Length: 163
Image 1 (tube, one colour):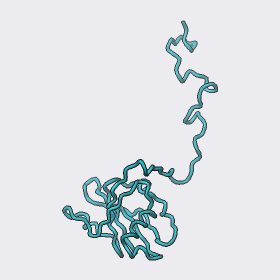
Image 2 (cartoon, rainbow, N blue to C red; image 1 turned 30 degrees about the vertical axis):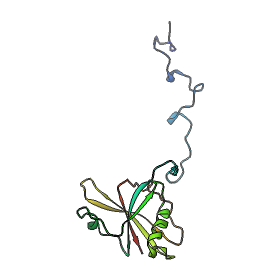
Image 3 (cartoon, rainbow, N blue to C red; image 1 turned 90 degrees about the horizontal axis):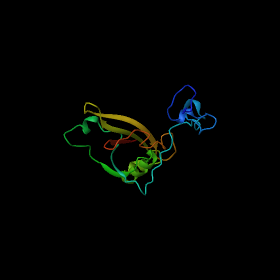
């Protein structure tokens, strides 16, 4: 008994033996094109009713960011910590609104909040990385950036400079 090929191969027919026109559409270079390339990453959708929030430790300061040495002391962290329960899809605008609840200076019309993540590098030394800024009274480019887009990892600290 002959298989699907005429070259004497007696194996079972597989997906590659189908006629390209008769089978399901292929993906990749031979298949139909995927969705159009839209600018920016796809939106992160989290069901906040079903997903447990994470603890975000926020350290706001007036006038400047905290010094990196303040995070490297033996078990001590900068004063004025605000603990926020939120989700990975929380935007910088949402976080601004939460900081406004506890910091009166952030409520001013033109208050600028500059956000930085503080996290340990591979050697265990803390690193501070600026991730965006939001002006309290008007929309801006960084408003819709969320924690996931900014590569936040659970355990990182959020340092906020309020100007």
